[in-house]
Length: 238
Image (cartoon, rainbow, N blue to C red; front, side, top):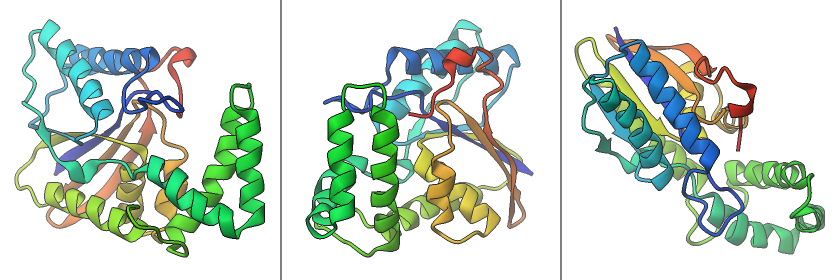
């Protein structure tokens, strides 16, 4: 059997103009993960990263920990199929379409805008975003320039299938995002497609989700584990 370790990136700079980058906390989460792996001399046969900056920054911190420990670390291979859905275009383009036709959603966006800068920002954002994502997942509202949920699901499923097709006993690390991890869990459990987004909401930054695979079979071995983040101050979801 082989082991696929899905690693969510460290905390990114949400709500900023340059959101595709790790925060100071995100850098720390990734560094602690690298030290955790290195201390246990965990070896990987292959490393894959999505093409987003936050994926590369997380992988770089882990690679640096291996270098400090004098341990080998495979050269990462970039596979855009592991990228997150484009939340920015969903929020702006698709969100504008929905707000124009749905007064209740328009009220949610207004409540969020009023909360920006305050302590309740994340709570109001999540209320709005979950409604919008449910519409995106259903395919009820489509917009030019916004990747449809079905397209996203196929893209991630294809990237996963490529890993599962590898032969021999091997351990593969994939640095990705919460959305693709949700798709992988949903696919493995043979759950309905919308479940992928429900799983996504619970995926912590720098968490580990492991799939065992081989001989045409795949199973979920662990989900959303953070044994390396012993300090509660290192736990974050966004």
